[in-house]
Length: 380
Image (cartoon, rainbow, N blue to C red; front, side, top):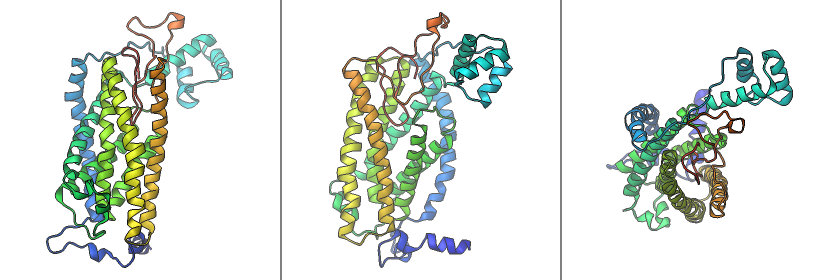
């Protein structure tokens, strides 16, 4: 049974053009070809990434945060209350009015005190500014290095300048060590993001982020063992070109460098729109959708790859919409905040804000995209 499923999964007609078999991609005459088994190393590498990230955040990002004067806002803690805590953990973080009245009777507190307790309790669960800064620092470092490395891998290749050469000789295209390591490191990193997503800073587009990570892992994996490597390297470098700008803007936002944050946001928005909404659909997708049909009939792998590219493109449109909406607020002088961020609640209207605090009016960028802070350093 399992052998039958295995054989069917690796059936050549699924992954390769007609009249080609896996035997055509076996190493020979000093030429090395991509194999699915190459990807096994990415799982232990992903765990290694998590270890490296831990020490990076501890010994690099934390001292950097102190150097940039990243300071925490003092948060008022919710006093211990078993009744309210039980409801918070089992019934929800946002009780309805009828539930507030019931909890008020059960706990002996007024309705206003119950609402205040839940505000403080929700704030306790929100990630600290230092946690956000360390996460942004780690991603900035990786994306910047990955972008530079990716450009070094593809800038001297003829298909970087002529997209038709991506398919020249396909699929009998051997790989070189730089392509191998570029793929393994990128795929390992996205595995590590998927493994750590439950503990990372959560945004309102949490589900979209999971879809993005899964789609990216599937695309990178498929493009490797189906030998779409030339197209894959172009796509990965294109995505990395704006991601490091996003993360650097988040870092400066958390440090309170308002003007620097805003200026980087403008550059990020321009690069994002050009790369994700112009170059990707009109150059890269055109390359993967149109050019292959000039060489061979469409097959399952062709449809599968381009379908996953379509999923990513839809996510890019969604994030671009948030970016443009934020940019419009920025240009018109309105208060700007990340559309995806979970805002911190304040009690200033009741005169209970901690002395070291301030309003939670501004937001930083989220994990993949919009960011802007039009005030001084506030909360993400």
